Image (cartoon, rainbow, N blue to C red; front, side, top):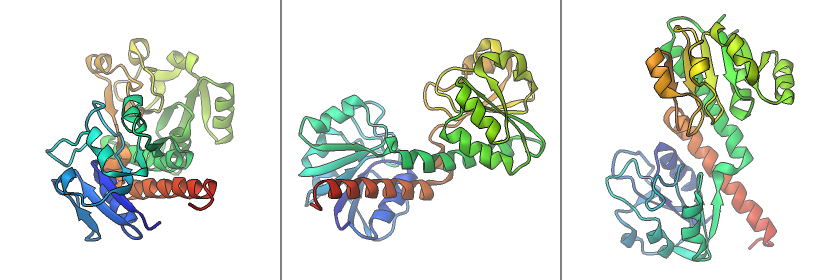
Length: 294
């Protein structure tokens, strides 16, 4: 691509992303005070004012911000305001980020900057689902006192992560049931060799599973369903906020529940960083084609 990238904040995924982009671009990184190993090709900066040139692209983390004002910088003790970044990018530059909120988008768009959310791209979502599913299975294997083989598994939802989970768990010879609202999703579950049950019928069967994986970002496992779950069952919630489990009630009832947020960045940061880099490359290539190669 031969562009100048500023990688601002983020976790180990951002560090891996910087390494990948630095193979063919000039890459600067800020917001990594603590140990986040990057290759020598990546030039580290201490502060915004230390940048001597402007960026073609700024890459913000996933998620970009927790307060809509500063960048998410878990590897730094210093805060970086989103507003300050508008002064270090070229007028025709692009700001990339993951799960960009409307208030964050407005900060850049009011300066007529282009904003692109890599996390909403289908190729990112599909490949990110692989890391999420594999990480979830890893946690299940660590937490269970038994093998996965022969266990009765319930997957709530039938989206990308659920589909990848089916593939991974099938290799362990598990007995998989998929719960979903749409009849079409239940039909696909059967095609994949799984049992199926409508969400509306969960309370009748939910007590018979060893592990439950939730992928739905809505509270499916409420008090009524939690009361019927076996106390030997492990519940792993993979959904983004607000999650799919009433955690307070689960705690009071003694239902063992683990909520795994940002799992790809924890279990497979290098792979996840490359996925982000590839997605950004796709976006830039599409823009180049649509603008006649400019």
